[in-house]
Length: 237
Image (cartoon, rainbow, N blue to C red; front, side, top):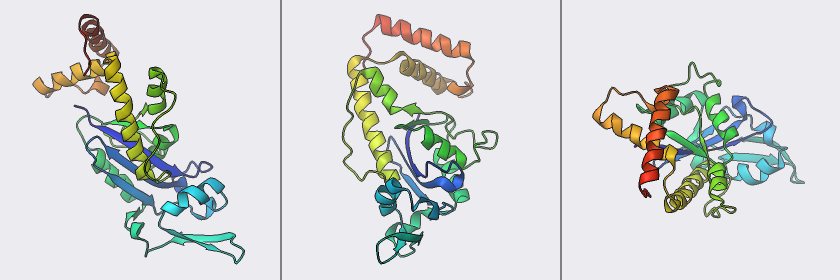
């Protein structure tokens, strides 16, 4: 089975460079977590961003220095903060994620309104796919798209701490499970079944190409087989 991972990043939306990444959280379907705070982030630049200052910075190991009137003037990492152990240079975060994602088949990546999150992940390799490890996911599954396709108007409320990257990654995982349960109640989709049929071939033939390495015709053949099975049987899980 293809491993499924869940990503969230906190970032300065005005800064698309690597220095705009504040923190990154990721978990997978068995609860293997990774969390890092970018030591190379431009902290001073976010002091005037009301949303980040109010909702994101309180979860980071930083100290905001203020005037007597309460106006923030400088910010710095706080080595005495219990979460300071997660502060890492961007190059170390990239190396950690290289190990985290390592697999023969690139894991599936899921996020919520995640286009920016995936760009921030890729920014750890300067958005250069030619140098980014092959097992780092190139694309992602959008939770909101799944919800729209199922006609789900309201997703479950987040029970943990919002705007903490790892807590948000956990929420993405829980929401994905909620939506997958609805999908299974409504029947398995052709795309998922096609991928499972292909995954089964890897069990008997270790030399078989990964899904991403298949030609468009080969993928179409798996999808056609999946559609035929769905037409003949009531497959729900």
